[in-house]
Length: 157
Picture 1: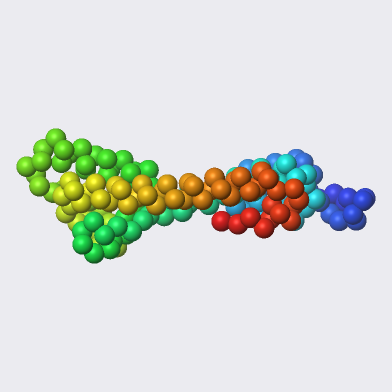
Picture 2: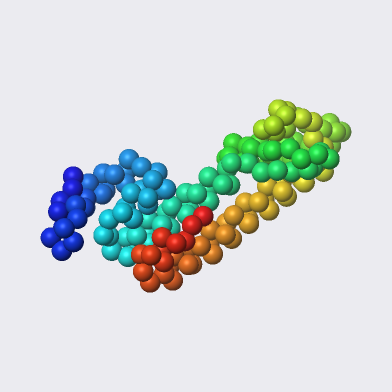
């Protein structure tokens, strides 16, 4: 529901409709929606922080590249894939005579990996995730330091 703001002559959502919209949108959509209205700076900052957190998480789980097998492959990085990587590493640690186990890549399906190769994949995935988290924290600090809605809106993933 929109109401007319008597100070600006613009139609704006009511607090109740903002909360309803927030629950039906992902944080990126919600920020893009709310920034169009005259909301207080703290509300805008919170929405921007949530947008950046959401986009960071999407970037992390979108996968990563690793050259652990001698050529670059794309690996999944969602929670299930992270767990499976840990299981595969542990499996070869407790039974090294297996030599290798199949592990899923996004570009070539399951490929055999040695313990050393799986550790390389782990390192590459960790390094990508860590870099994205550092980027998120730098952007979040910029959001908290912003003094105007224009400054907040200029901070992008």
